Length: 639
Image (tube, rainbow, N blue to C red; front, side, top):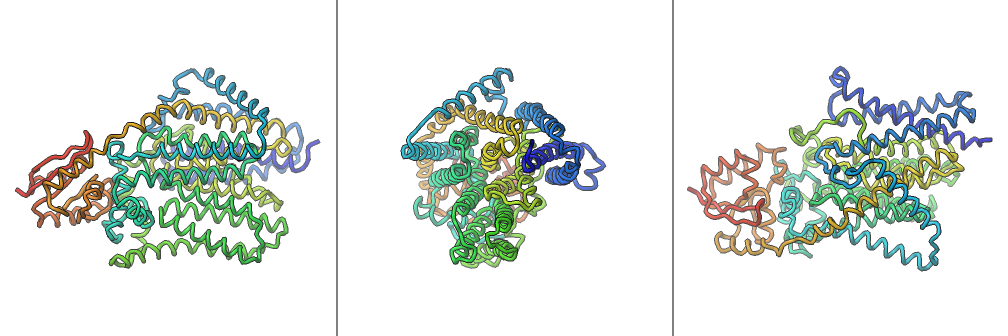
């Protein structure tokens, strides 16, 4: 005879899977229907929102329908659970096969896509069984176990930092590297934020410029080291969360190892995503885990101290990067409300007004971050910023246009499986709140991580490129590990528990094995850096040009940081100059009217042909300085 909690949990499992499949159908209907898209909009974000909204509506409807007496029968309930479990097989298989078709991806070069499915699946199952058996029979002394985990985690963290360390990034990905450094270079020279000097990726430079100048002399050569350290911090925060959230030690090991996947398969320095957009969410989730482990009296002074630290984390998150910062705020609100309700249901003395006050305090982190950037502007001699400047480029009409915008395709795609995972985790918390039943506070953290993941996924929606989906990779790993930990047989029944745990275990095993197979090549590729040829090039330019010669364009801030010169042309990075193109070009062209000598780069001319045409009418190339086949600098004299 099934218990009442078991029946309720099975019904919620059915409702979640049913809502997930319905949300995929809803997305495809909106994606294919010109009639609907004309009325609600055709952007990727609208389609994503329609999918999430459909999930919520269908889940609520399914929860209500499943209250009918017929669905309380054991046979009917088990039959529906079986259908849901078996439906996951074709769904996951199609998502896996579609992995090779996502734009700008290279999944077809992965070994598990190069061999027949049955062979890959057989190897994967055998490896998972072998690992599970070995983990079950491995006995280690409790004290030695701590040292083993510490050493293992240190290895993962160190390896992640090395994999994201690109010292001579102009030879790897000059384009994205230059975009990051440009913002830091501006702040190091006291340039206020404004229409033509804004940073596309946030105001992180305010937090990075001083330490970079103190410890790295402000040179671009130090940026990679800073990013490697931040990468290690990201991985360390995730490992802290995984270690204290997930009870199964063998699953902790898999989750920790799988964190390296994204760095193994990203062979260039895309620091805008990792670590910059994933840093603050990782720190916040780790902070939630830390608070969850503390015994805090609701009326103690220490509680308000924790509020202050949380508020500071949120303020710095928004200053660092507005997109991920606002998502962090949303995730914290979910955690605060759900954790407060859990305390009320458990009769811990928490009141509704305590929850409301905490949420109101945390929401002030947004105007506080705005004020912090405004104060920076005043401190460096600029004017107080507007909200439009602060939120740049989120509401700029020219942001995410042309080649940056990729339409979502109809069908089944890997991102849908990730979205349903997050939505299901949130639904698991939602049903407990609706039932007004006591629940483990860990569920609040998983739900907050899922909400953060759903928010971060909008970055992928704006530009549906293969590696962009990894913006929510940390949250996905935490939730997959949590799924394995929470789907216990006594709570969901043997069928559901075995199916979901098997699926979670296979996914984690696949990520670890896949990453391990390619790890050697990734480590070898990181050792091929040159001997700082740019230092030789620096000495050549010093001999030929006067100090602080006017300069502009891609890669210029890096060159001038090593020279110790000022470009005198501070603008938004030239990789994204199209967002405020007219204002920036008017400024540059006006400056050039009074300059006899100018330094620029080959890539600036290649990317902006009209700029090249204008400059070439005024100047001629006096000398060319070559770093590599992609990076060249021009010293130009007025005709």
